[in-house]
Image (cartoon, rainbow, N blue to C red; front, side, top):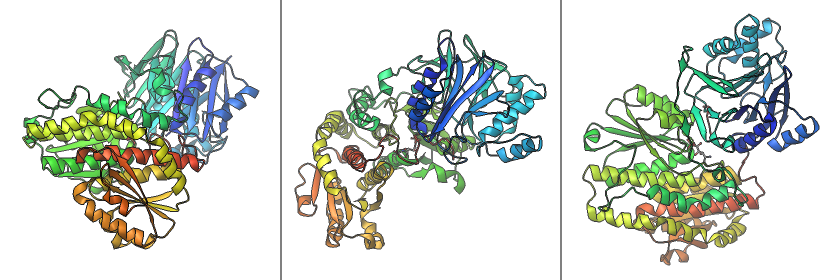
Length: 610
Ligand code: M6R
């Protein structure tokens, strides 16, 4: 939810911190700040608003020093304000802390500290951590022991960066249930919530595990487990290019990421099929024998990843003929799910750090399930904790609205379905080869759709005054409408609902009026006639209809006001293609409405708190 960055080394810390924060701004952007240690003093500059506001403030009051921490915030405790912005100092500024996560039991400590005379300037949980470390340190503990003592007492999640003015040559970092890496440089080291923040300086990192604490100096990094034993970790090298985290001439990351999809789809298909059409998924060890031992499958995720999971459920049930429960991770834990050692739990996540998805996965693991992660972020918590990992190879996704990661997840669902069907003898070679042929065309078909941006721009201009937008369809078309509707909500701030077309008459049709836009998705030919009758019903009640159909379907033109055609493909691959115009529609709608596409209000990229 928030972005944490830290630096120690020979450079001026502030430019490094600002550069890192700019790359992390997608994680939260309601306030930002930096703390730098110089001449035995911690100096802090922080402000409500975007990183640009912080930069403006730093121009007036520049800070210097070679060790520092920075933060960009997505508010949890307390409104966005200068006071609530991080870093938070202890009362006497001996300690300064940046924090991502939530300290659930902070009130307990706050009262305890207030009784000792500590004054609090903010409404945050984080300020309590700074003062609590200070309190233990003042009682005579070593600074590292004081940090450990606090970590023993706090409950919740954290990625922490800590400075102490008595130790100008070190910074301390710790994590639990919130991502944090230690970047390794030459005579300099870093901490960051996410790799893009330090990609300009290094690709080598230590991936901190839960409850680990790092003591970081310019030329050394020591990592300790919760029992304070030093642990030796392997260096992990990211193979991402710096350009992957830059806009490269596009106006927004979202647009850049939409246009990266032909490559993303291609990369995800590369080397997956052998010449006989057999699918091999590196990292997945689910053969006939393992599958024989599984009697229940869950697919669990949040938001866009959840919709990719719904596509997986639909395809596995229809093509492999085994039942699959698809669950929102935020609900999963609270329904006493039926899990045992015969359960296969598949979790889907771009970030690999979503708190609810991680918690659902841990619950399943604890109860003996085999856990498969379909994950984009390499080295993320889900990737590290899952038994099997299928990486979605989309590269860093920076825009809050997920686009290319969804396409990559959908391709993963296609491959997984075929793999399971082949292992269980449910798909013959002829069918596989046919689907393989269609799949190989996908990158160029996505390109064909992207070439039709002017058509989408014209459609958004036409429909920009709509007050409500319904996305309707049946089967896979309904699922893809869910994703289209989410995109429109999150960046265009337009009220929109996905509805199974056949359900309209059971209530929501009462909402249809002449300011309503209905996006009718009709790529599934066997369901076409049924959805068309629902389209006619909404037309009869004044709605305007924009249809998404496969090329060659001229019939739909009789009923819809406009039709966006996607290239013809196999029915199971249509969701991937039908979603591309939905992404562009949401993008241009948001632009037309003057919204900040990459940083939509109230949202952050990774939801690392419940
Ligand atoms: O990182 P994850 O895939 O686990 O994130 C899940 C959702 O938070 C995410 O898909 C969210 O719904 C996006 N903002 C949608 O565009």
